[in-house]
Length: 145
Image 1 (spheres, rainbow, N blue to C red):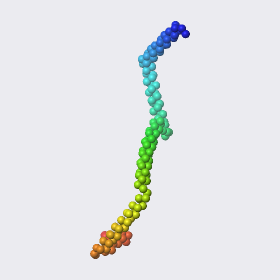
Image 2 (image 1 turned 45 degrees about the horizontal axis):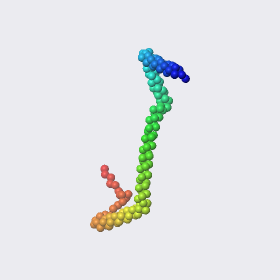
Image 3 (image 1 turned 135 degrees about the vertical axis):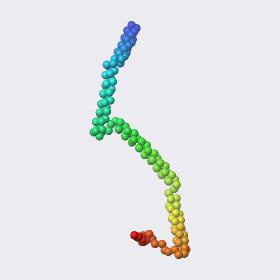
Image 4 (image 1 turned 90 degrees about the horizontal axis):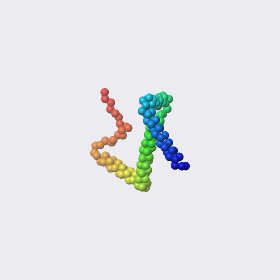
C-alpha cells in the first residue's frame, strides 16, 4: 500500500471515531434518550421484583436464596471439618496414652472403691447404738393429716 492510502485510512478512522463520539455525546445529553434509559432500568428492576415475588409464590428459591444457602452449607462444612480435625486429634492423644493403661487404671479404681467400702462398713459397725440401716426401697413413709 502506498502512503496516501494509509494516510487516508488513518484520517477516515479518526473522523469516524470523532463522529461516533459526538453522536454518543449528543444522545447522552438528550433528555428524551436519558429518560428512556432511566425508564428501561426502572422497568427492569420492577420485572426482577415481580419475578422474585412470583417465584416465592410458587415456593421456588431465587438466585439470592440459593447463594445464601450455598454460603451456609460452606460454613457448616467448614465447622464440621474443624470438629472432625478435633476428634482426630483427640483420638490420636488417646491412642498415644496407651490402651494398656486404661484397664489397669480401672482395676486400681475398683480396688480403692472396695477398700473404701470395707472401711465404711467397719466404721458403721464400730459406732455404738447405730441401728441397722434399712434400704430405701424397704422404708415406710409416714403419712400425716
